[in-house]
Image (cartoon, rainbow, N blue to C red; front, side):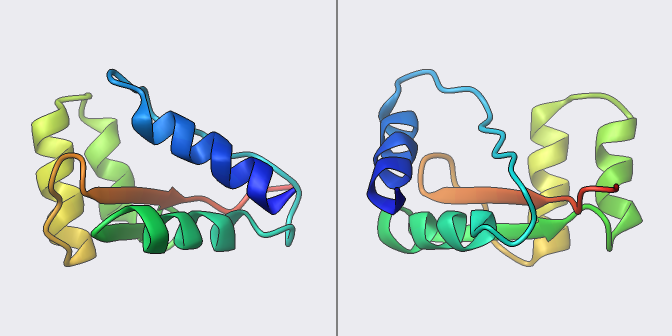
Length: 97
């Protein structure tokens, strides 16, 4: 299963004009581990941000979808320089039951 999911992520990465990837699933099945492993093996860096812990991150999306502004804000809040094509941006949200 791990290799199948990783190959799906690699196929997504290799698409020319890819859209954001949303990874849903039950709790404690390895979603975060999979994305961190994907980052480690296929990207130069990752900007990992929890939407639950940081209201400033959520506010970035509340004021419109200007991608340059959002990327700059995520870079500041995560402490990571975000470079197109080499930085994986992981936005994590705990699922509310």
